[in-house]
Image (tube, rainbow, N blue to C red; front, side, top):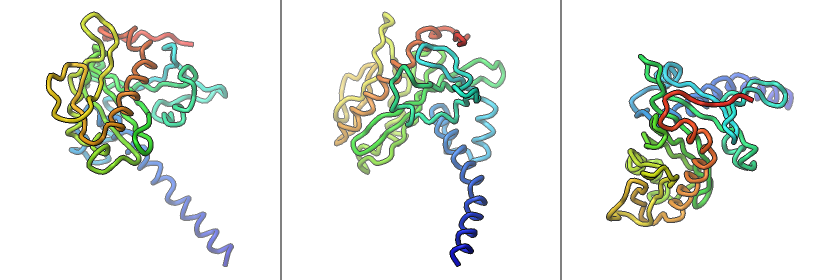
Length: 238
């Protein structure tokens, strides 16, 4: 009986594993695309088709050098990098995926998408931040979280909150890095181009979002500084 059920479980796992991997791929690519397009308009197959047609990716290290293979010589794929696992490493030891959303006709990059990871109130939060080709203006942002308070911090994954980041700037007029800060509370007045309105009752989540965005934009700063205002990517190879 033990052998029978053990074999049955093993066969079930083998049968379901390819489907699970496909669902994980779709979910990951949906989140990346969610920073630049309204993914709710598309089904799973359309998501994969759009991704394959319009997205390209690279992996760089902290010094903006392309990383193509790991220490064992295996090819590194940006989509397979576990940003959560990388988060535990020293920033200078991490690998940094960069996703580029292309114009279909010209093949020019329309947006650069940077994955991020941090801590909210109860558990992890993450984001994909898309910058326009000037590498200064936010085109869009896609937040995710594990456990945040329903109706409060959990609102970071809502369209309402994510839309507040569009057209915000990460540099000031003199080129100094400012990042983007979610303010405390809601319905704030006099919000500038580096600020977004906050979420009532979710100060800790907002602080976590601010810290995450600032930290990762700093980590990507070598790439951003070398390529902002240019349409051609300037990256060194190892």
